[in-house]
Image (cartoon, rainbow over the protein chains, first blue to last red):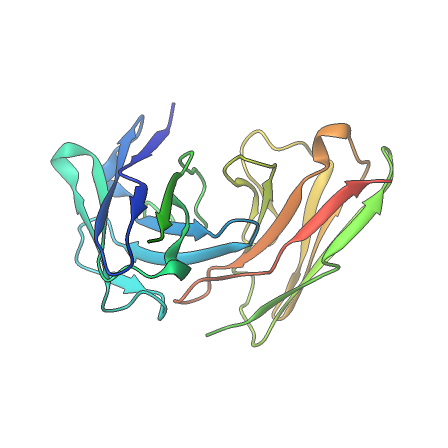
Amino acid sequence: EVQLVESGGGLVQPGGSLRLSCAASGFTFSSYEMNWVRQAPGKGLEWVSYISGSGSIIYYADSVKGRFTISRDNPKNSLYLQMNSLRAEDTAVYYCARGDDGSGWPTPDYWGQGTLVTVSS
Amino acid sequence: AIQMTQSPSSLSASVGDRVTITCRASQGIRDDLGWYQQSPGKAPKLLIYATSNLHSGVPSRFSGSGYGTDFTLTISSLQPEDFATYYCLQDHNYPRTFGQGTKLEIK
């Protein structure tokens, strides 16, 4: 069974940092692209970042570029999102979501339950 | 970035009704579109990928169609568990972009 479990969320002051983790199980993690997607309270979904299976290709949304860093540790079956210079508008539930395994179907299929990040003084 | 415009933003319907939600891309995206269902407090669930392919375990009352810029999600006969919010997602290029969502409510 595919499982994605996020952790690391919490309350942080504006300008602060937080590191999110996503523990994957039930599939060959290194074969899959991964994504972070967020949802502000009462709002829609916003794609945040992508990383290829090897970690060699990375993309970011303009809203987080230069402040967030996505990474992965394949031997540990883990995905990360380092968030620096946090702003109030970064307040959201952050989901990790599994992407393509090279079969040509990139639509994220399995999602974690999410972890809430609140940026407030 | 490609803009995805969903309509309607909300919809009231009854159990057994047939409903259609549309998504329009600001430029052609071939068939690189997915649909998600999200219930309150839950993570999104993938319904359809590549415009018309049903994800594993998704009931056949859900279907998708379209190509290029105009896409539709159809639920043929609404069930109580279908009342939720639906999002389209273009996976044609980066940055990925979602539609703003359609909230499906019970009439």
